Length: 237
Ligand code: FPP
Image 1 (tube, rainbow, N blue to C red):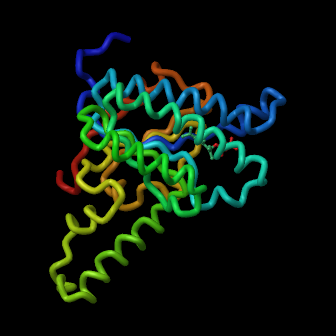
Image 2: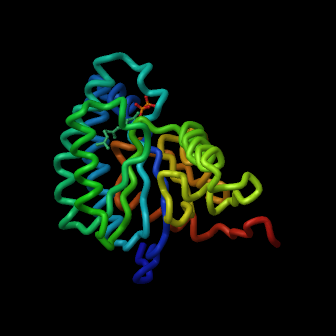
C-alpha cells in the first residue's frame, strides 16, 4: 500500500519483541536461534524507523522477569545484546540518540561501560530516539522514580504536594520524551507485561499475529495504519 510522505513522522512507538521462542520451536531450532533472527529484525526496524522519521522507538529486549529463563538462553540473549551493542556504534552515523532503560548494574561491567559510552556519544544526535529496555520492568522504573523524588523530599528541596505528573515523567528513563502513541506487540499476545507502565497511560495498543523474527517493514506500516485509524480522545469526547 502506498503511503503519504511523512505518514509516520513524529510518532512515538513502543515495541514488545515477542515470539522468538515459538518461531524457533516451529523450525525445530534452539530458542537462541529465534533470538538471533529477532536481533536482526531489531536492527532493520531501527533503520526503518529512522527512514520514517519516527520521534522515538522503545524496544523491550530483556525484562526483569527474563532472568528466570534457563541460563543458556539468558546467556544467548546477553551475547546477542553485546553483539548488537557493539554494532550500536553505527547508531552515531544513523543519528539515533540511544537511551538504555532498566537496571544496568546487574549486567557485566564491560557492558555497562559500553552502554554509558554509547549514551554519551549519541546524546546530541537529533534523529529517532532509540530506547532499549534491558533488565527493565515498568514497576521497577516507577519505584526508582519514587525513590528519586523521596530523596528530594528528604533533602528538603521538594514538598510532597509539589509533585506533579510531569515531575514523575521526568524521573522515568524516558525523561523529556513524548509518551508512546502506540505499543505494538507481535505474536498474538495482548499483554503489557510490565512494559512502560507509566508512559503507556494513553497509548493505543496494537497487537499483531506475526512472530517477531518474521516481522517486516511492511508489518510496521500496517501497525501504523491501524494506529492511524484509531480515534484518540484522552478522556475527552
Ligand atoms: C521474547 O520472545 C523475546 C525476548 C525475551 C528477548 C528479545 C531479544 C532479542 C530480540 C535479541 C537480543 C536483544 C537485542 C536488543 C539485540 P520469547 O522468547 O518470549 O518468545 P516466545 O513467547 O515465543 O517463547
